[in-house]
Image 1 (tube, protein in one colour):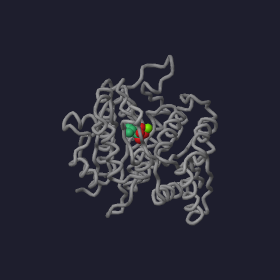
Image 2 (spheres, protein in one colour; image 1 turned 90 degrees about the vertical axis):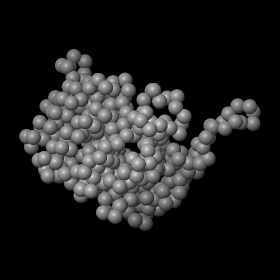
Image 3 (cartoon, helix red, strand yellow; image 1 turned 135 degrees about the vertical axis):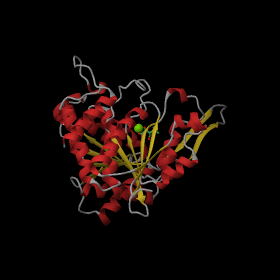
Image 4 (cartoon, helix red, strand yellow; image 1 turned 180 degrees about the vertical axis):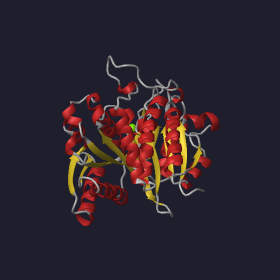
Length: 368
Ligand code: IPM
Ligand code: MG
């Protein structure tokens, strides 16, 4: 294995299209920056179900455990809606997260100046925004037992999911949030529903414990998650790092995504504990989904996936300069007016295709 290994899982819908652009970027870093990756590719989600009858094979799972970083496109599509729950495309992604123990999901919401007018919020509310949501990703109601749909005593049925968090699970994700905050504006806001949930009370106490015992220098505040959702759309710049559980993080990060103008812009990193070589277990994926309505048409915005690769450069390979180089190229392409369909205003000229957007970013990289 080369010194830096990547497993690429394009997945479903627009996943393969956006990943093609990322491959071009990876090749560029190989040929001009001497960053050579051992790249392998596999199937996940519906694509894997179609080929193998399962959304993730054991072989692909094993490969994901071996490599330094997994890059994933998207999973899901309406043709899989009727499938049994256990083989739904999403189960492939959840298995990767769970078995790789990727407990800290970093979802940055940054508003590029060139796009501040695309947000549904006013320019002054979002311009300059730089917020980081740290979502717990391997526990909570997504995985808690008991779960299932059962016959109920009244002749009807009952659907059950369980919200469950342990001290260790809360403390480790809190540490991730405090560590990040120290490299940013040194502030963490923790969100739960301690007013109605015991798991929320424990969450609040354990985050406070980590703060008091290990990170007293970081400013910590607590907020109920519903109030937090409201504050995210009212005045998002009040936040630096938000730490929250799996389900609340899912919701709050979609809301935060809209602040940046388009869901097509947001990358994410899911990190676990360090491997033998010191690199963390890691999976990088755009926050957007498979967008079946535009799949296969060359309309998708590849930026979220490209920025996810930039996060891989930063968090897996410690190549901060290369990550910044790529992020600046994206920013400059947008400033030059490069726009895919999701970033168009009425009356704008024809949008760029997925591959034209990739090329626009490559052109800037070549000039750098
Ligand atoms: C996300 C997605 C996933 C989630 C789905 C695809 C399982 O919405 O990554 O935010 O709910 O975690
Ligand atoms: Mg989601």
